Length: 319
Ligand code: SAH
Ligand code: SF4
Image 1: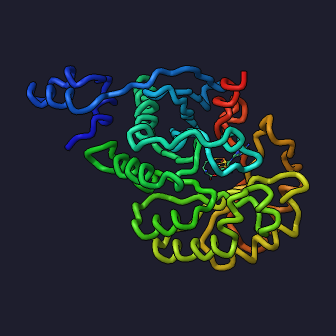
Image 2: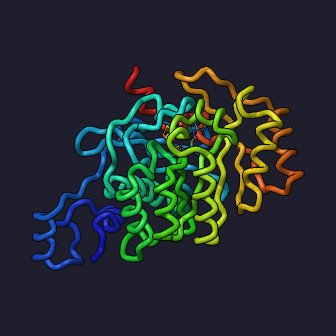
Image 3: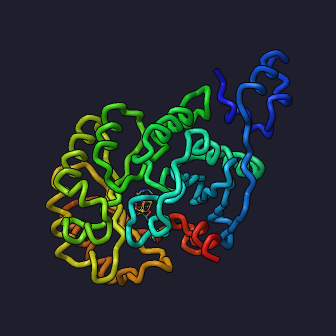
């Protein structure tokens, strides 16, 4: 079977236009399922076109943020998996908004198709997918994994699994499921703190899945998949940017194949924390260096157009 979304890439938005299919099949398809092309409610592009963010309207009126990131030759789409999020991370615009609903597999895939079409119109091709938009993918794991399968299926979008990365706040049963079903995609974990006391304050779900439990799941994951995990660390002034947190992190990561990403905060209205100083970030990175832990330091891309986690939605809906 060919997925409807695949055909939408070729600017073909209703079954009647799919003239390479037999008429009877086209009529049957039109009666069985709807092809939905979401209207773009708002769009923002950073100067230079490096980042573009579109707010898409789903059939029921739900609003979903999708971001295109251009970096060198890489063309990535940052996809949402839920409208809002129940996890309530303090620094996150989506968390501040609360949970609205899960997205279906189709609604997740159509965000990728939307960006593929926008790129195709400029003679470009999508290279990467990051499941890092609004929502927690592993709290909507059925739909997210179904969407990923459609993305990698050669009869679907045919994207290489290794070019797809899922970011989770640390939903332990979901990580176990990823290890078990091994779909071949990359895993990123939003850690942000190395002690339960600090992490609980930033990431409330840590009370349900404390660090020992989370790291046990990550060890199991890396052993089963033989894949390295990306550790995300939002460096916050006076919160988690000190050498003490860095040293505890190094202890926790002992022997685990990881890459650490030190990220700068995109300020949101609902959180008064401030990004760590460059000096603190560099000192933190030196501790990782000495321990031989690979790491990168980066600005959360899209900052110029508030493309961090759910920010466009919040702007529109609160204004
Ligand atoms: N729920 C998943 C994926 C979506 S959030 C998760 O938490 O991993 C994607 C990433 O954006 C996470 O690493 C999250 O911690 C980060 N993030 C959220 N708010 C941010 C902000 N204001 N500035 C920078 N990064 C942020
Ligand atoms: Fe949800 Fe991720 Fe935002 Fe936390 S950071 S509230 S898990 S979307």
